[in-house]
View 1 (cartoon, rainbow, N blue to C red):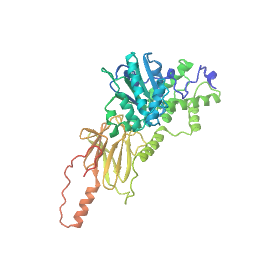
View 2: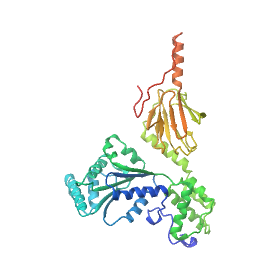
View 3: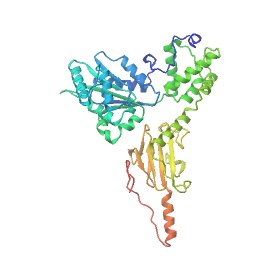
Length: 427
């Protein structure tokens, strides 16, 4: 391998989670602080989410490495299980052999164990990784376990970690009781280019490089372009680039090495990759658009304004458009207040609806943050520092059609309609 040519003690970019290689960006440090708070507070869940490869598992391992001896930990990673399987797995973590127990006995054994640990002065912590795979029934069992208490306080501390779909699941109406118990919720976003550079240097330093500059300065922008700041992707590309440099008998990584690694991995730019993933995800979770006549006809228009002036205009036809900061969106708004993929607008023959795509700053209608809103003619949707002004072309066509059908008929301009909020369709 390339350890000797680069004068390293160990491989710096292994994919397996290793706490000593953890780079604490500001957001990772904050997430870890939230985890640590569970030791001192028992009044609710802590939920940590992040994209695949964002460093959640490494963060957990680092947290567990530093945990105090008076804390009993149950860590569950296999989450595609039934409620009984989950309760059995929990008891196995506590040192029991529960496989012949029925559900009532499983619950009673867990409750007794929790009370005994509290009486002995020990804290009990449950950490569930990949929690987005938990069924609604298992999540409800976890909520019930969280209710075990003495006369003074709850006795089970809980951290749920998972991909962004976990937030969607927790927001389901049937889990409202669990959601009300969430005390802290934090999402790990990707690293910035500056953080990515520090991340690479940190891992090399831990591996034995010291302050040596192994990656050429012009490689960092290229690495960021193809990894988007996702730690796991950074590790893969950096490791492959170092192999390319080793094969070329060089003791430093050049831009050509990185480009060769990209070709070998057959990667496309991160922005393109995430756009394809997002559209595929939307198509999986949204019902298919019905086959309608005249899909090319403009149903409405969206004007983009900032500082009181219109800067863009886009026609809305039957189908779906995605709005966000990066060039891969159908409507790009290049602003630091706009998320990479901020929201979507779905248009049918009869209506248009705007939906938030779990953006950081959200979307606002009449000063109220909304997740999903059916658009009325003249609606103004605020996104960061920009305004989206909705103009419904269907109304103009309807008035013109009525006027032609009934000569002399006067069709008044529409008055302001009552706003329909949430998920309800206007009547």
